[in-house]
Image 1 (cartoon, one colour):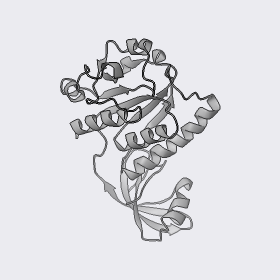
Image 2 (cartoon, helix red, strand yellow):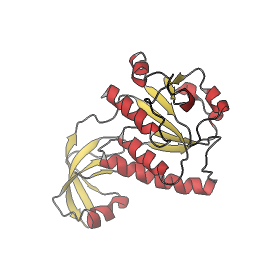
Image 3 (cartoon, helix red, strand yellow):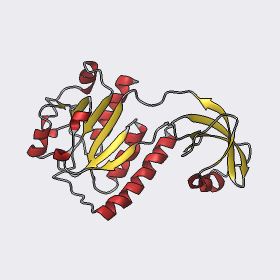
Image 4 (cartoon, helix red, strand yellow):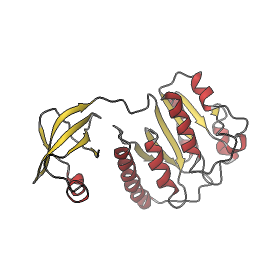
Length: 238
């Protein structure tokens, strides 16, 4: 069933006008008609089953609150540099499906992709659209936040209960993610990954006091490593 994230607050048995951004999809993609049902998630993260009441304007009535816990019990912030081509699109989409709470895109020393302020703004709009659509598809009640940061050395990682650092040069000696989670009662996790060329020694030194994790017995691509880690975390909690 189609799901839409809306800006307002919904109440049962009341009728609301749909946000403009969803009108085209309802009318021309879904070809909906009065009486059709779909889901909305309101500005407070509450999900509702609603019934379309009119197409001029597109309006709906909230008929049932959906009580289901689909979000992970921990907040995961994924730190990733910009990746080449459409790899970043893939990471945003699949990581959203796997339950990421926030994305922070930082400037790695070996990043191939360099964006100026104008391009960052354009990419942000694109990534937000991908995250919203992935959240709708996977029936989440939250759309991950996306923001940009500078170099790793400028970021305060002490704000997290747990920081997991995936360093290629220490992959075989790193700790198991599940073992770390089993001994750590946490509410917030930062998971940090490097670019296609890997971390520099200087960047790796930043995380000398944090948990270096192993991502299996194989060396993974930059776009695959986050998905592996998120899948392991998800399997542990779910």
